Length: 132
Image 1: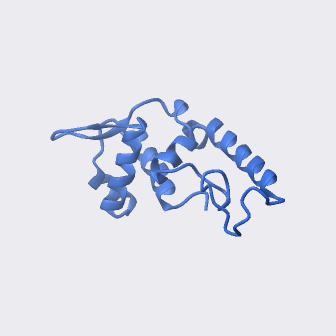
Image 2: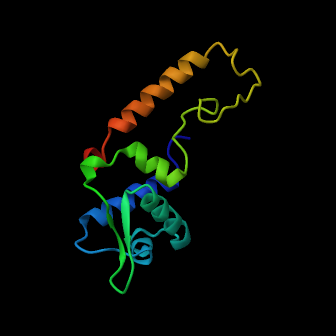
C-alpha cells in the first residue's frame, strides 16, 4: 500500500503545524486531530529525524517546520512517516523479494520497476506546498 495512516497523519499534522504561530506539542496535535498520542509521537519523531520538523524543548516547546513547505517533498514525508520508501507493489526494488519466488525472471518486473520509478519521481517532485 502506498499510503498508510502514518502518512495521512503526518500530512495532517504538518498542515496544522504550518498554520501555527508557535510550536505545537504532540499532545495538542493528537487531541486536535483525534489521533492516538503514542502513534503520532512516533510519526513526529520520524519527521524530526528527517529534518522536516524541528523539536523544541521546554515549557513552550513542541514542533515547528524545519524548512519551508515548498522545500519538503511528499516522498520525504512518506519516508519519514513510514520508515521506508513508498512501494506500490510487493515486489518492487524496495522489498527485494518476490511473492511468487521468481525474482529476476518475472515477465512483468521491468514494467513494475518502471512504474515504481515514475511514482517515485512524481512524489519527489510533489512538494507539501502543492497539496496544502
